[in-house]
Amino acid sequence: RLRELEELRDVPAVTLDGEQVWLRANIGLLSDIRIAQANGAEGVGLYRTEFPYMTRSAFPSRDALFSLYRRVLEGFSPNPVTIRTLDIGGDKTLPYFPMPKEDNPFMGWRSIRVSLEREDIFRVQLAGILLASAHGKIKLMFPMVSSIGEIWQIKKIMNEVRSELSREGVPFDQNLELGIMVELPAAVQTAHILIREVDFFSIGTNDLIQYTMAADRNNPKVSRYYDPYQPAVLHSIKRVVDTATAAGKPVSICGEMAADPINAVLLFGMGIREFSLSAPSIPVVKQTIRALSSTMAEEVAREVLALESSGAVRAYLLDARTRLG
Ligand code: PEP
Ligand code: MG
Image 1: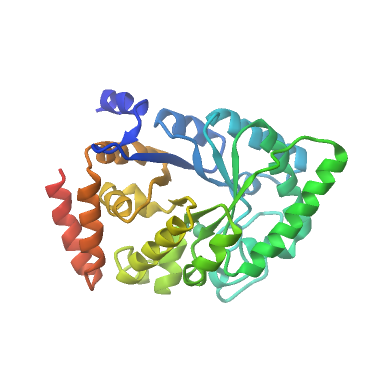
Image 2: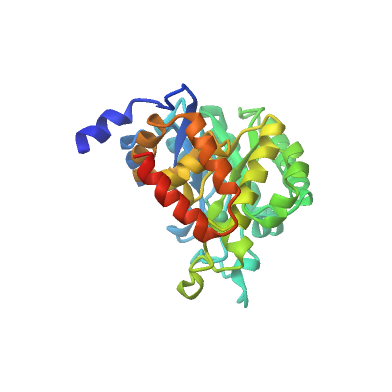
């Protein structure tokens, strides 16, 4: 089995009828680079940058971030690395950055909301990212966006940071692609508006399920409600994929949902061609894609989207799993 996985590492994820799929890795720490490489990741679809902040005792400097991001880029060159800006709050805290005590931290001061209020912290990270962008292909992504106003604010700050770096005379990627995570129902409902402002979408199913179903992703008491097969979740995903596709812009999936091969079939059938996974899941998803025809996957998606309950979806996919081998 190990041999098989090794052989899979260097072959592309292409369906039987020749549709190319990108399988990228979700990473957090430098130690994840090697694991991603070993599993044949074609770049990084989600770099959770809060992890290096969490393992320090103070906010990292611009230059520390620059050399860190540069090392990550070099690990995947010439493939892209999608860097997500700091996504703290909720369940992720920094030992040196006190957060307010909140009744509902997941609906509170977290993620891009922190970055837009603490511009000092945000600017240092953006500068580190821009500096690194001269050394490889970075795609920059912002978490937890809920409205277009946040994108305007982000772009204004980005332009200011760019001007400062230009004044210093340091090189950076002038055409850095900017994208957002679609992980809030508000972003799903306004996807047609948001897509005009960005170069790509990445659907974060971990949070999207939580917020769509109003079920804390870490609370076992409501895990029954935290269900990717709920039609509310599936139709949200479909809508976001269709919106990005109609606009001619790429859309990927970076939540854990995609790590189950049968879910990857379903998501492929909905039109997704780029997945970002925890690296150990890449080979088995690749194996599934390579044995798949687009018509089969499209049929799965069409039939699943016509079902009215998560139970029916689960039963259908269980059967499809055996049918598709
Ligand atoms: C998500 O929300 O789906 C996601 C990929 O990000 P995180 O798990 O870091 O919140
Ligand atoms: Mg998230």
